[in-house]
Image (cartoon, rainbow, N blue to C red; front, side):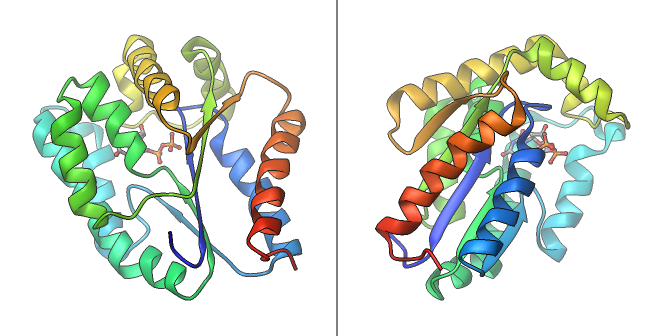
Length: 213
Ligand code: TYD
């Protein structure tokens, strides 16, 4: 385990991650001060370029293995350039998605398989794992309604539709069932109720580590 605290958020598209990440960031800044907030894919100059390629709808012929390797390439960069150095300094890092996304989207929904994804995940992260992962679990149809309310264009991954999102959700639930690190959060509830649950878990962890300011 690192000296800092590494928290990740996961879930299908439209699960409400952004809202919860914003609330938690505000809470941590008020209580412990120091926070590094990143997102995947992206978060570095190299990674943002890879993100552009991955999410561009014009690239609809992208091979699934190409897709997998690009997500991992962006990850290798953000881990070495930002996440590892921040944790080594004892800081709190929140990432909007991390390697569990690859397990659920590429490994499970794209059916590339657990073994290949696990091998590439551990290569890209050089073995780094989050301390806590919040899985915001929601029915894909409900998530679609929320995304509609949010507005804006769909990206290449979102354009894959509700049946793909349902497979992604199954992949995540499979992961949550076998990992103590992954906390399943019922994301169909009111946003403030969801946040109270997340805040409680993070507060306990900060206290345990003596990081509460
Ligand atoms: P983004 O706009 O960041 O979506 P969200 O707001 O839902 O996080 O787009 C990232 C997309 O890439 C999203 O559809 C999930 C997908 N993704 C993968 O398929 N594999 C991965 O390893 C990662 C990190 C993301």
